[in-house]
Image (cartoon, rainbow, N blue to C red; front, side):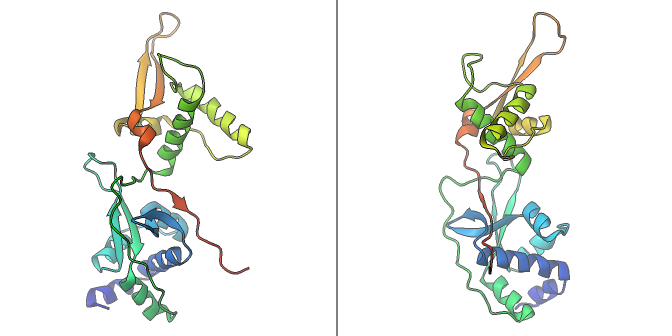
Length: 224
């Protein structure tokens, strides 16, 4: 291990993050990208380790113990990183933990139709709007236009139909974020009577219908 790597690994929080990323690869969990699983976003690491990410992942990357890929929406000029432990990281973890070094499969080339990362809240809204485009009455010469209230009722309908809580209530800020990213369309309709403010309708855009989003795989349970 390099001097930089040794210095990084003295931080117990960094070690906990590396431990999680190693286990994620071993158990076949995480996002699948470049032909391999084991990728995780900062938010996923925070939730799993119950630690606030305060530079641990960039430090592991700088020490060449993890790989990373930018999966932000193209053209936004922003960055959104997925991280995955590499062979050097697995060896560093084995040296410190005393466990056997796990073989880490090397990722392949980036797919031509590269997937993007969307946070759970906006992703839920996008999935609901995609479903809304598949059914329901036409409005404004097209399917899928719904008000915020109608989307709330539609979420209840979808969950009731399947007997699950897969979808959850949509926040207006999530819709605005999707619209700013070009994945959702917004339409304001001024009523002729009874209301001063326009009624706002939302619909998934053409880009939102075809956008490929990275999918999370739950790690395999060990033992038992």
